Image (tube, rainbow, N blue to C red; front, side, top):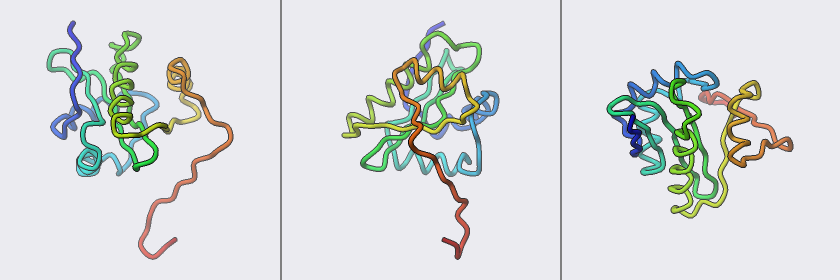
Length: 144
């Protein structure tokens, strides 16, 4: 087994969406359509990565920023490849790319029920915030 890492490409989308669908804790929505992911990658070149075992996609991370803060999405590792450092390597590559763009702090969104995911991030030194909440709205024409 030789694991290689490369920038996430729009061509990776079909196998990435299949991976995300089989990984518990990954929330998918219309924002994860092929067109939306392509737009995200265009806006954030070189900050998202994919892990491969040969030609098999085994992990992903999407990274982006708003010029001030970085954001990680969809860190996913195929269940058969977990506990081998793939997730940590993907996260590190993404964070290094964001830091190279001047980003000093990064956030991610995780379901409160995703205990395995929370434990993973905490082992990497991330802090679960208790002082803020995420408030969301589906954007509809003519509403604020």
